Amino acid sequence: EEIYRDLLKKITELEYMPGDALSENELCAAYKCSRHMVRDAFSRLKEKGLLEVHPHRGSYVSLIDLKQIEDILFLREAVETAAVSAIIRETDPGDLPELLAGAIEEQKTASAGAEADLPAYFRADDRFHGILLEKAGRASLYRLLEDEYIHLRRWRNLEIRTTRRIPALIQEHEAIRDAVLHRDAAEASVLLHRHFDTLKFAASVDEGRDNSYFYKNQTEGERK
Image 1 (cartoon, helix red, strand yellow):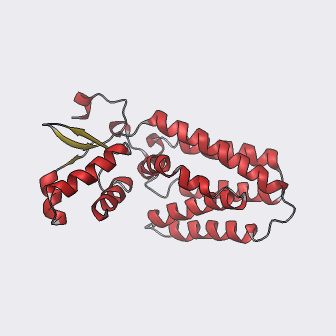
Image 2 (tube, rainbow, N blue to C red):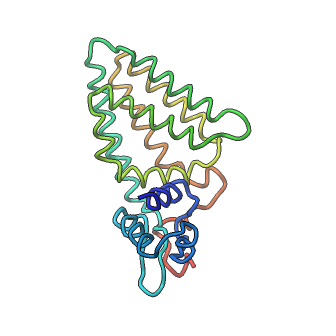
């Protein structure tokens, strides 16, 4: 379990990039464990679509499937739009303003300065969206979608690796919060669509990089 969790974290946080080869022998030495234990961890990662195992050739971190990411974003937008509508129908927002403000402040703190703490920023981002589901009484949806969200987080970590886009994303969160607190369901829906659409098209060209190498639209020969 520890080996699996550690490899999962390293793949999600891009310590192992899409397309990287993973050596059973090297991992056995690193974790001081048997080949059987590493293979069990590989099997679980393969089940989640994070590892491709080719007999007699090796094991490779799977490339990112952009169509899958688009589908996850489509699903996430639909779920959160419904959650926001449910929140707006409630007569008492309770501690929602404070919770959303806290998540946004965490994002600002994590992204401040020359060296942003991107893991902390992304945790605060997840918290902001999780609050919306929790306040709509749908917190369990995050657990139900956890396996799919692993792929979304890996893509997000790849495409948003600098602070360049973060201020605009925080401003979008602030606009979504304001629409929810002003009970403007139509505006909140528009803002959520724009937010997820913006994430979807956070293309590498915005950062001056070419990330196409890490996506499934490349042939195996081109990847090599």
